[in-house]
Length: 496
Image (cartoon, rainbow, N blue to C red):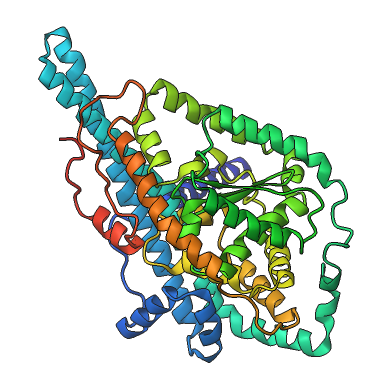
């Protein structure tokens, strides 16, 4: 009897495990139907409008909003289900393009040497188009969708937590406990005991730059001396008001990606897309100061010690192999790299500087301090962050958020640091030099885009000549909602 009871217990345990696994599998399935509204339409519409606002506006509005915990939780659920739905449809599109590519390849193999040249050319063009379409769908699922919906979640968290956090900041100011925060000695910037051995990183940075250039993972320098000189002047001015103890080398790269990145040893790279996106000099200064902080705090070296940097060069080598040899997925990947989907960021990925939350938060704080010390409005960086998060169109800004991840804690800490800094009269927002640079940049963008367009039909060595320009499934200016809605509908075949 005892043995029988034991067997029954084991059987029941088995059924329990099976039921748990079945439930887990069921929960992991992505949605195949559009998410339902969990809020009253009026409340839902207001929440959607709030999520489209810049962070600065939400910081001002949140303390006076009357949103219940159930409203916020319902919106979280809606965001989560919307992301699942959008991802499912984009993955289905990618699979369709892959299947259509395989069909064309099979047809080429079936026809063999008997195929007419016109037919061969047509199939080659279709395959290139389909590979590009799959790459675009892959970028959507791997980059654009996660970035957009992570941003929405951060803003929901802001609406929920900011009223309490705002009161805490005011209490810190009143009690002067903010003076005990790390790096509170802002009047000693440049004389603080931060990282003494910055000079040891110079060779590491030189090696990193050389490696990226050899692997064809570095966009060319912008061919405009006046723009290069302007950015260098602003950066050097900030460097003189920072904790940087080594020479700074600044280069503007001719890429429409909205991004900037720093390498150990004083190497700072700004992509022209970021110059296009900035609206005033304080925004540019905020970004430059942030990247400079990574160098001063030796974040790159600290990541190298963790053996994270090696994967960057491995990826760069992979990309170069695809580009130079025309590998299997090469056309679509190179199209995505060169023409605005994820550019240099794919080769560098997140392993360079953006993956570590503590490093990003520290760079936010130090960058705000350096911009303030130089005389700029210290809110420039957070305003630029706002714009990238809230502008219409998630494609262009995706790279920025991949290397500068969005989360509520960062926004609060940045806002706190700005609140703690002594106020300066006539803080710099805009300069005539910035406005002159923007005029030159408009001319340069036309030239750069024209030169890139000439290369567009032949994306790879060995690619099919004479094909029409590869189609884009969505525009750089499309919002994530518009992109998701498009992918929810049956897409036309990418191949002709």
